[in-house]
Each structure stands twice: as C-alpha cells, then as structure tokens.
Length: 211
Length: 211
DNA sequence: ACACGTCGGGACGCAACCGTACCGTCGCTG
DNA sequence: CAGCGACGGTACGGTTGCGTCCCGACGTGT
Image (tube, rainbow over all chains, first blue to last red; front, side, top):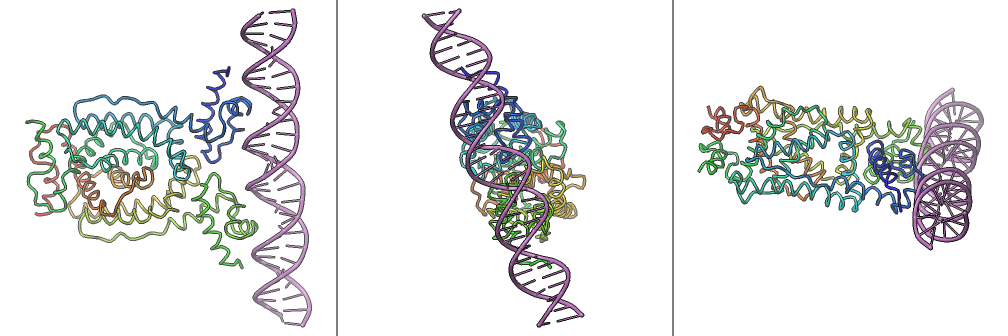
C-alpha cells in the first residue's frame, strides 16, 4: 500500500514547484527534493511528469464550489468576483494558472484537462449565473453567452493575473455593477452608436423585473 | 563588426523557439540550432539567455503603433480591438505573450521589461483613448482609469489569449459598443442596484454629446 | 518468530545543456 | 600583398535531470 503522507507531500511539492519555476522547468528531482522524498516514490505513483501534473492540477481545480443565489444579477456577479478574487489571491494559484494556461496552448492534453476542470467548472458557474439572470428577466434569453463570459471573466482575470495591479475588495461591487450593465446592454443589438435612444436599454431591461 | 544577417537569424529563432517551448525551456543550443548558427555567435551578442530574450522581446513589443482618432469612443474602441486582434492572431505572439506574462510573475526583470514595453505602450494607447473620450464628453473626467483599462483590455485578452474561442472580426464592433457602454456607466457611482432610475446613466452620459 | 511482499532510498548510465577556450577563416588596412 | 584583428565553428569539462535497477527496512500474515 502507498503511504498517504508521502503522496500528500508530493502533491504539495508539485504545486509549490509549479509556482516557483513553472511547468516548463518542473523537474521530478526538484519535486522529490522539495517533498523530502525519493524519485522512486513519485515514479511509483505517476507514469510521467505530465500525468503527475495533470492529476494533481485537475484534482485541485476540479472541485466545484457552488455559487449562492443572491437574488439579482449584480449580487451574483459580486459573489462570483469575490470567489474569483479569493482564489486568484493565493500566490500559488495566481502563479500556476497563467503558467498552465500558456502551456495549454502547446500541450493538447493540458488544454483538455484544464478545459474539463477549470473552464467546465467556470462555464457551469457562469452559465448558472447567466441562466438565473435570464430566468429573472434581467438578461435577454438570446444573449450571446460567449460574449457574456468574456465580459464577466476577462476584466477580473486581467487585473488579478496579468496586470496584477492592487485591487481592493471594495472595488468588486462597482465592477459587478458595471459588468452587469454591460451584460444588460449586450443583448440589445439595436443600441449601436446612435445616441437617439431615449428609452435606454438598461431601463428597458430592468423594467420587466418590476412588472 | 557583427554580421547583421546572423543577428537577424538569431532574433527570429528566439521568437520561434519561445513560441515552441516557452521561456522556461528555452535553451541557447536550440536557438543556435534553429538559426543555423553557433552558440558562440549568440554569446558574443548577449551575455545571457535573459538579456537575449529581454532585448529581442522589448524590440518587438516596444514598437508603438498610433491609434487613429475615429471621432467617437465606440469607433476608437473598435479600432483598438482590431489592432489587438490582429496582433494576437499571430500564432507566435499569442503563444509568447501569455508565456512571458506568466514568467514575469516570477522574474522581476521580465516584469519590468514587459511593463516598459507592452504595458507602457498599451497604457499610452488606452490613456489616449480614454483622454479623447473625456475631452469629447463621452466619459466623465473622474473616471477610474485602472478599472477602465481592465474593462477594455480584459475581455478581448481573455478571449484571444486564454479561452481561445474563435472570434470573428464582425463581433468586434458589438464588443466595442458593449464595452463603451460599460465605460460610460463606470463613472456613475449612483447607478448601483436600485432599478428605480428612469433616466438611465447611458442617456445621461450620451446627452452631453448632443448639446 | 519467520518468511514474504512491498515500499522508499541511493546509485547508475544516458542525454541535454551550459559557458568557455581554442582554432581556422575572412576582411580590412597600410 | 602581407599582417592583423575580429568573427564563427568545433570541442571540452561540468552540471542537471531522466528513467531504471538493486538493496535494505518495515509491516503482515500464519
């Protein structure tokens, strides 16, 4: 039987090593060194570096966390942003995720695993959030979901994982409000560039809630 | 005197190798092999792998391209998105940029160089775009610039470099319109969650244009 | 208590890469 | 035309990591 404590030590070491040097430079020896374990212990558990990383990462990223229903789109968005911020504030996660995403562009198996773990999870959450809003009447049913996901995830991911400019938690509701408004407008193709609209798409979308 | 043709070959090989294996696995020998050049030729020109990459990347990324003034915010955004899309469609660029951004999180010198090259350039463009809109009266002068940049760059970067879902050029104007609306709303802290507003922030922001 | 099976640790051969020292060649200059 | 200086290419020792093999230790079942 494999000793669980050693398996755990390896998992932790992989994540730390992944954050420290990235997938490209990840070496089994370094993992073993960091975990205080022999290489054999690793090779006995995983066939290769790729499977090692895939199994561990999908294990960590695959855990689905439920998105509580706050009652309205802005609240749901704020909640989602809070969860995302919490996750991407972990120095290990914020280091690993962009690295693996970059690596996924060249390694199909990594891409596939991330798709199944992270993005499926996130798309489920995003879809959930959007579906709720549609059911509430906050968003149009024919909303472009891809565009909506980009609008929801893009700005916060950019800020936290790419730009890395400090972002306080108090800013999240504002971001949520702005993104919510953008989403409400996104399903109104009539908006365009004409400033002639007097009944704005926002009120037009919000109105059904009150009726 | 150093032979320019060899220097050029090295530059190209570095970019290709960077796209193929990433910064972490980039090896001088592989670059020399790909360029059809000896290692000495490289070491004679650059002290280390870091300086090699920094110099070449900043050379490529540092070229400032002007953002034409289309007359209104939506047009400017569409133009910016077109430029971004064009840049991020290059298979080499879309591979290198996320990789270096991930690497920048652990290597301060890379972070600094990217900041100076890419982000300074981009912030200049973004700032230019925002300044113009403010001067036109499309955006409020007290706009949160950081938030605005996140809203502008985030969605498209996410779509092109992370999610990598196909995105046709025809979708860009729609994205531009949505982002523009979001920006217009972003400076109206009164919006919030109350659906009681009858005069929507959009028309409130657009109105000054017509006056 | 003993024998067996399994696990972890260290060692080994092999390959890739680093950075450098040396050597032949080319072009410029007087 | 001859000499000099700088360039590019090859060869080398050292390091690191890969994947495997063998051995000692430990626990278990009878």
